[in-house]
Structures are given as C-alpha cells and as structure tokens.
Amino acid sequence: MNFNQGESCRAVPLVVTATALICFAFAPYAAGEPLSKSGSASVHSGWSAAGQLKDLGEKRAVWTGVYSGTSFSDGGKGFLHKMAWICPGATMINGASYVHHGYCFLTDSDGDKIYGTSEAKGPAEGVDLVGVVTYEAGTGKYQGIQGSHTFKCSGIGTDGQAFCRQEASYRLP
Image (tube, rainbow, N blue to C red; front, side, top):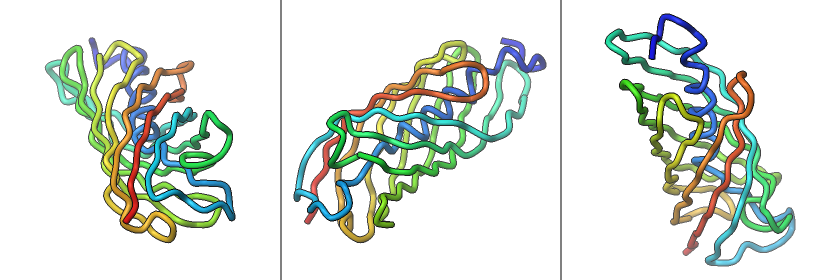
C-alpha cells in the first residue's frame, strides 16, 4: 500500500465511515410508542465520512474525521429505527490492516440521545469493517441504557460511503 497515492487509501475513509456509523445503529421507537425495558433489533444503515488521511510513512497512516448516517430497523419501527448518527473517530492503518476507535451520538425524532464507544478492525485494502458498539449513556427514554451491538459494514463507491448491518441488544433500568 502506497499512501502517497490517494487512490490506494480510498477504501479507508469508506470503511471508517461505515465503522463509526455502524458502530452506533441505535434507532428509537416511533414517536409516542413506549420503549421496552429490554430488547433486541436487526438494523441496516447508510453512512458517509468526512475527514483527513495523514501519511505517517512506512505503510502507516491515520484517518481522523466524522461519520454521519441514519439507521433503520428491519421491522420498520422500534429500537434502532430512524436514528441520526454523528460519530467522530480515528482509524490507525498499519500495513494491510486497520483499527478504528470512535464515539457516537445518536438522536431520535424526539431528541432523545444514546452515547457509546465503537471499536472495529478490518483489512486496509478491503471494504469490510467488523466491530462492536458499547452503549454508555442516554437521555430521555434511553437514560441508563446498557447493551451493545455488533456490526459489519461494506464500502459503496469511492466517495467514503458505506452500508452496514447491525444486531443490537439493550436493557434499561
């Protein structure tokens, strides 16, 4: 991988975008519907990334930026449905692999939020990003939330966009 050529690193922003965005596919229940004290959800989401890639030499680089996306429950309602995501993060590229660390802020249509960390890894030349998001806190209906979700994202095109699949479970006090 030659980081002096922009083309060789195009997959990285896409994967990073998918990682952070996927990392927090927490969508809320439809406005007005009560949220169960525990549950699970299968979710899909679309993401885009905006950031900078810094070549560190010796086949090493770091990508920093913000991922933005929206998640939708496969069932069309409930937990993880129609949630907006903002996820700043950093991805360390080391030769043929990368590791991502990020933090996400998810907001539902009522303005309630979920916060959590995301961790992921994958091949630098590939488009698949696999990881987990751990829920740390929430506001409104999500106050006291605990849980996590796994995700797998794949890059789409060459402009830092991704499509992700997530499986989530949560508990509330």
